[in-house]
Length: 360
Image (cartoon, rainbow, N blue to C red; front, top):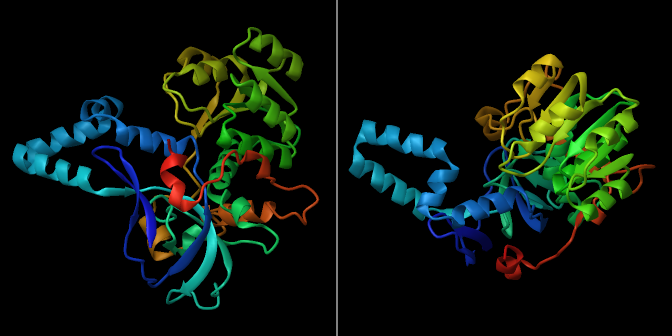
């Protein structure tokens, strides 16, 4: 089968032939019909792999520390061999797809069926490949009236939905979304569907225009002066009830901005990749609540939940990553009076054979 991979050493992308995977217990074999490239998360991964070793070290000092610890423990020679071997491993790209079940693993009989439309999630699992083996915990049925090109947004929408859940905004509250890239647009739409008044903040006028189309109450171009006056006017002098930071920048400016525009005891949720130096005094004096949102929801990065399908008690954890994924694709159904319409978010389409150009 064909699969898109990247060299961790050189950053070079290629479409290559690899053996097709085989279904195993607790998993589904899925034929990919559409997969999503996000300009945020995937671009970050691709750009990191393209950096020199020195560039990788500067960007990820945490990995440098691990290497130093390994040198102390195992010696320089063994560490060097391990690092070079890791760099030679091909990196599969992709983490969000939609397709058809072509084989059902042991233990999932009656829960999924061959031919069923599904959305799948997970880096290293829901790859840009013709076929993928994905655990049931990272798979959700897709309504018949939702097409593949919409359903493949399920994973990214789950990240947005989990951020909205973590913020815990109430009906009628005003929430600022800092950064309206792909993830931010989904957050805006989900806030609107929740009855929350979304305020889009960005430097890109086209993104702000799209956010308004998706239902944002108001939008502000951060390249202009007057953000404080804008917020005071929109909130009657109160300040924002909540802020979701969905920007992608090395700067800590989004945190500075959140502290400035928040009301007393407001909630701040970070879901983007930004600098994290925040104005302590302002956060303390306003007693702001800060939460960092973890990917698709509860269960993410838990090997027992994701790999062994060991579920959490629903009375304690109602919305896991599995339920978030299922809810997002359900909300895409055209049969709903209001829905999560992702059609406006697609800017380019590529055939798998043209994958290298998609990342150019």
